[in-house]
Length: 363
Image 1 (cartoon, rainbow, N blue to C red):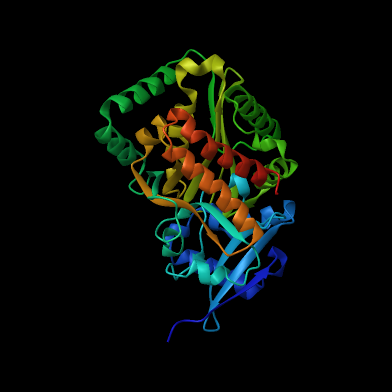
Image 2 (cartoon, rainbow, N blue to C red):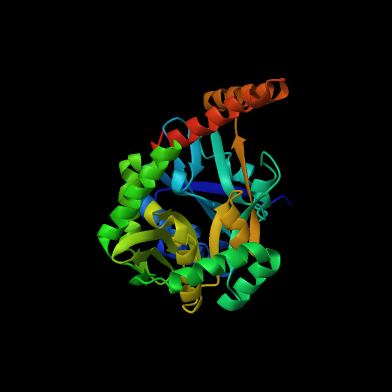
């Protein structure tokens, strides 16, 4: 007999104590869900600041099978929970073979556009646009020293450079202060301002322009739960911020989120120094992994001694929204097939930027 799936769409405040307990039990049974992104508290905070937050509750043959938190936009497009803040996404379930298309058939929207979905969940893998992309991980399971040794074995030259900068900072004739858990609101504000300046300088989309983003970050900063908390870490040299990072952590996983450094201290490599100090200190506090997310960046390759696959794609049903999205994707494919050189990538980049803009503004 083919398993029968049924779904309910609820708001976060409608989640019962029994359902919340099941959610946490599913996370406990699967280390792939150890990221703070999969904690119910992350969905709770998103729901406080975005009215479009929903939870898809999936049952199989009448038995609770999983949860899929998401945002149900006014345009009819559903997106992963957290919008532009969401790097990783997926079903909270102990049944990774759940049929995503069947689960969404009664959800009432035209398109579910996902990114950063766990590739080991076949529900997403069968609907992805391409092969899985690696999401980089600093694996600290065997301790900080073993982690550094593994990175050195993979790229000895890069690790020599990192260690040279650590020694340079250690020998600096200055007052050097690391705060791994910095509770100063003014330090967080300085990080946000520096990050926004970086977005302006690089012409990247400034996600902090949306009030809900800044409000959610502030709530995360104030959240102090064993399985979910915001974490601000800073490096100061002679009383001035040289580098900072804000992320969120569960008991075992830190998600590396918003790093910045100040140009006055760039020659010291303050960002890498802070990262290494975070890894060393937090590994002594039960942390076993730092998730850096996907992307082909030098520091991720150098400090990533492990990783897991993530995918992007869409699931849709016939609707006006689906037709509009399909038209845009068709134009992108057509442009890529034409001999336009670099211009062939422009439609796809424009579509992705528009989608991210819409996600920032909850459209």
